[in-house]
Image (tube, rainbow, N blue to C red; front, side, top):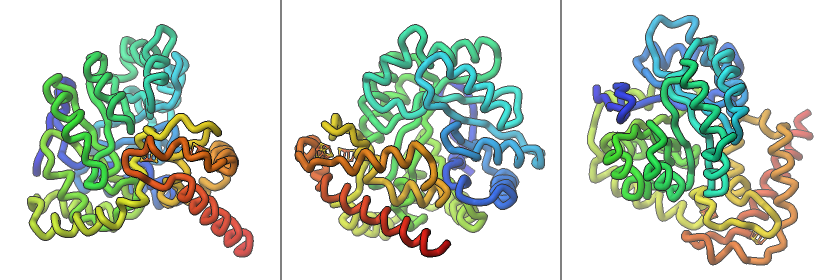
Length: 344
Ligand code: SF4
Ligand code: SF4
């Protein structure tokens, strides 16, 4: 069973970790039993976030019932020193005295990066938590490879987390070699591109065939967790058949799959384009209760202001028809809401 050293943290973990996004979508009892089974199966790195609603809490409950050591990784979107309070809340939810890896979550652009690194910024809140022994290592998570590249050059972080799948392979060239050279650990999120890819075999064999990284696909059911684990322990290399299937799937998704890179920003109407384009997979992973979340409602309302000015179009390296996709996703969401209403 392959293991990976997470750079200068010197943590040695199995090459397949587990991500805590999808577990939000199932009830507490079911979620706790899935996490427990995942750890008993042999997974030794669990990742969560303050932003994943009840995910930390479920992990905390599950860990009370298993007797195996796990590496805990979690994160907060907080951009100021107040992240120190978020660390305390993570510890309370996870029911532990220390978290191994704590992330600045989704530092999506250079403005955010300046904000977290400046005195009074979140990085300094995490340094305080680290000095007090509440966390061991500080990580930065971003969908923007330019931000991760800068973070690696600055050498403040022990671990980075980047998107990586066959639909989003750029990190393998742009940041993984630099991270390796700087002895920084690499966690790879979105092995299934946020639930867009449904074929576990080619998707997982693709990420698992990349050296030095630890992919962290999540699972809300035991069946899915077992399927992922089986693929990992089989240890088969990426076969010609996988490569051919990947090419077919890439063609299928290339015209409408948003890579969440934010290169299309700024939008004159301040629309979170990547959020709206990823709405289907977000709801799939966060579960139907996410429809009622205040922040989600406000992002959707804002998207209705798209003036179709087209300013974002030339900035998208994948030539996505952004205004059309916004309309399509909003119409899909309205349909979903109406279906729910009728169901009540
Ligand atoms: S077309 Fe819509 S999404 Fe694109 S910049 Fe204009 S308002 Fe924003
Ligand atoms: S629409 Fe294009 S530029 Fe904008 S986040 Fe998605 S892939 Fe990136």
